[in-house]
Image 1 (cartoon, rainbow, N blue to C red):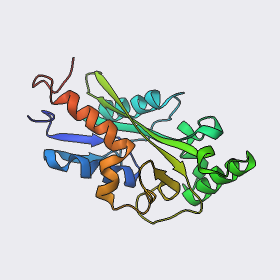
Image 2: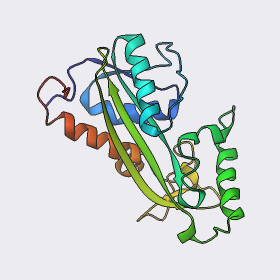
Image 3: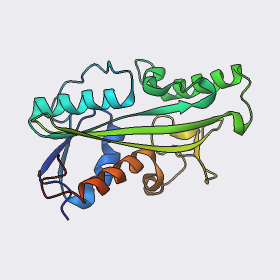
Image 4: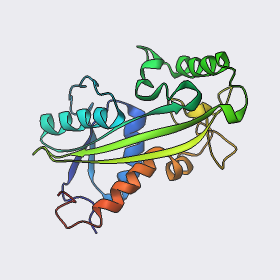
Length: 210
């Protein structure tokens, strides 16, 4: 069954890494995928208090401005020993230059400051909330998660963000060391995407809107 009736979809992100991942995930559906950056769309202020709120801010903004179906995500790293931080502020921990080597060191330094040196004390999860927004204001939301452990030092050059310090449960390498296709099969983004796919492909041909 066709995933969505629209021939063009905008990924509501200026993050090249995220756009690449979504392009890979959406490739089988032969949609015309463009990014918010390619369309010159503004980046809205992410003023939400949760992943859901921030995801919807982005998808609604892109849908309204472009007149297209928009797909957005808000995602981040939630570390148990840090009370869920950096959470929705995961990108901000990388500073204005989006330097995630700085962000990863901040996470490790914060864990060490709390005496979290063993794997059992360094539990974390990547969380992703996807939202679809139509120009008419309708929306849908899907959440994905992958759990694992924060390792140090960073390993690998694949992926982006905190990938080099995150080792998913059941694996002995980090996301940064994984082949992209291997990561796509288990990532938080893939989990949310699969939930979205399952929902939309079991709806009527109106694209899953209610």
